[in-house]
Amino acid sequence: LVSRTSYTSTGYTHQGWLSEDHNYFLFGDETDERKNNFNTKTLVMDVKDLDSPFLAGSYFGPTAAIDHNLYNVGDLTYLASYRAGLRVLQMDDLSSASFTEIGYFDIYPSNDSANFNGAWSVYPFFASGNIIVSDIEQGLFILSPSTQAPSTPPPT
Image 1 (cartoon, one colour):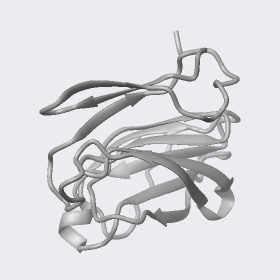
Image 2 (tube, rainbow, N blue to C red):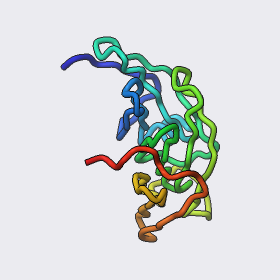
Image 3 (cartoon, helix red, strand yellow):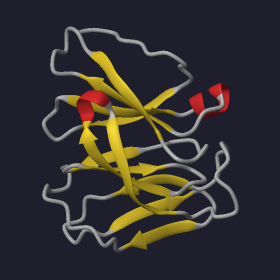
């Protein structure tokens, strides 16, 4: 164990992804929205010093939906947010967890409550820029966003 770091309002730390420069770890807590009654929360951990990582901050999205899986490509974060579907966030300043939502695709349009229906995961690593969103009940969505194709190759 190199180090262990906690954060407030914990529920179930689920999944995360490093920024391309490996200085920040973005992650979600799968049950904090229900447990603490706040909007979708993305946490940013500064991991430049692995002996002393610290929480740089948290971003709260526009809906109450539960976050699930997220992936970073360039300066964009692609977030599967259960009932709120795919959310695309521009990383403005990770040192302060500053993001701007620049796009979304709602695959559960009836509501965005904190329940376990809707977007399960996303895959934003195609050279074409296409994005796959998997849904628990409705299947697979293949999207062609209006943003540029990713500048980095898919993980191997």
